[in-house]
Amino acid sequence: MNWKHLLPLLLPFLVLSPSISWAQTPCETSELKQITAPSGLRMRSAPKISGKVVTTVPFDSLVMACKEKYGELKVDDQMGQWTFVVYKEFEGFMFDGYMKTKATEPVAISPPPTPISVDSLAVSKPIEEPIRLIHYPTQFKILTEAYNYCGDANTINPGINWYAFYMSEQDQADMAIEKVKIQVILSEQKLSESLEFDIRTTNSNKSVFLLGSENSLDIDKIKRASLRGPDNPISLFPGQKERFAVNASTESVELSALGNVISLGDCPEIDGYQLLGKSIIKGENRTQNIAPLLNLAGSCGLPKAIWVGDINGDEIVDILWAARSMELSVFTLLISDINGSSIWKVSDTWTLSPCK
Image (tube, rainbow, N blue to C red):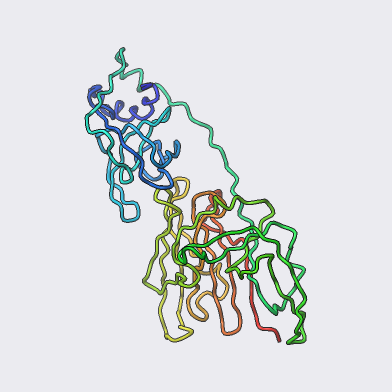
């Protein structure tokens, strides 16, 4: 192990406690561990969720983990502790709730051959790694395969990349994604005085919704975070909450519903309805009421999350919502805005209304 890599981590302890000895370093003894999280596990620069991500260790990989622990953590329903680990050329802290022991015999890690002066450490400054701003797309279009749709067909662009989301035939709790071509066709039967058209795809199966993007997407990297699909959407009454995460090693988002239920029925009346999202993104605590972003939210029944997952690859959940009134159904796609100050931003809306 290159002990120089540990200096920034040891510095706070050495400065506060000048009498510290090398026997108290994070890696006095360690053991071999195997990663059990199917999507891999993040390594961080400090034993906390807000610690900078050093790397992601793939599933089934082996790491050398210290026996010393640095605080408890709960991810979903899994309890565990922070531990210092070494993986290839990377060193940092990881959650051990998704690790299993491969070797029980402790492995002694030798101290550096030359003692290091505490005074020299106290005045040394760790090298700051430049912050890279990664661009994650937030602009996508959404459609449904609407029949006898009334509206402005010029707002629909068949020329961009379109992806259809279907209920999976193999697993009804999952969804299949396929790249398709869409067609905007003037309706054969005119039921009203306004312009009517149909939206169809090159696939004979009818999709749950369509996602459009200027850029080509890698559909294998679009991750679904919720096993509840459009046949069992997620809706929250005041007092209820739901937690989402793309996988066990990513930041979770908690949604809580607030408000007063005035009446129940097909269209329950709720006064002051709010949907508060909370998450830690880039080390910042972020809170956002998304109810104002969802047109008609709470006007006739509760808004429903019909798809939750990661579209733009930033490992924060994106959500497709559906809300309705007595006459309209409005779909709103919220895409995570990791480089902004909130959690989500509206990417697109799609409205279905009866033809008159």
